[in-house]
Image 1 (spheres, rainbow, N blue to C red):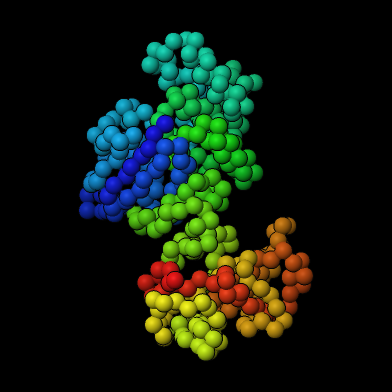
Image 2 (cartoon, rainbow, N blue to C red; image 1 turned 135 degrees about the horizontal axis):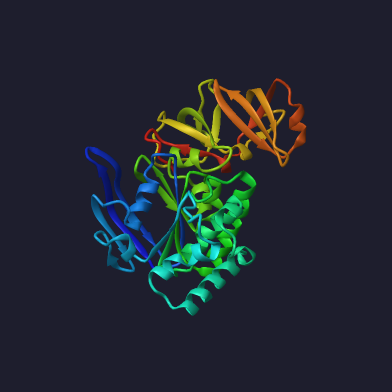
Length: 355
């Protein structure tokens, strides 16, 4: 397997710049997930690592070797795409072994590699079938098997589950995670689905506008988001935000909201009094309380089975609560809420986290 180092990598299409100096060090055997909205540059970065896009500036190294000018076939990288790209006239076994046959690998080695990959992916009973006789999940496993038999230095996944239904995506996420634990292969996975990112990654790279916003473990991004973008993107439902001003109080500090209510927060050394800030709290951390400090209008009650999402209006802004308390199903036209201080996030005027 291999480490992958990305240093000051930029990508432009003529006058349009889509990546603005990306720096990232990926360890040998690590599972990295690039996550962000459409157009943030995550797939472009993946294709540059694979050699399918030219590097405008900066350097990409695989196992310490500069690969900017290497052809894709010389980088020893296997890629699994959103589309399965299987040969319809070939059996599953032939699809999986095709790249090895092109390299004129010995037949016994091909058979061993295909058998091993098929066993890992549960494809043994399907080896003689053609793609048209497979389900979407089975086709995606064949595409993964085709990558595995090559025993590459790294696996690159470009939104491989986006064509599958929700239940199948859940199943395939588990299979990919088990496969990584088994192979211990360096893997880079691109998705816009933050649930996939949270469940699969050793580390998440959150991207927006061609810039890396934060790199960390899933819980680091969830618990201590670096800025408003990461706070709003990671988590489902997304974090609630309220505008206010940072104030000093007799007990410490707080955020004064538009109606004059002061929400207590831990003091932030880097904030001056009366600085405009954004207060954030995740829906699952909001507490419904009869004597809560703020009153919100209930717009919609959404049962999900596991829990209940309350869609509220607070200070004219959409606001959500996620609760396991089924009494919320009978919520009246308004509810009162409290914000536990340990779960509050404060962001400064630039949108960066204030600590």
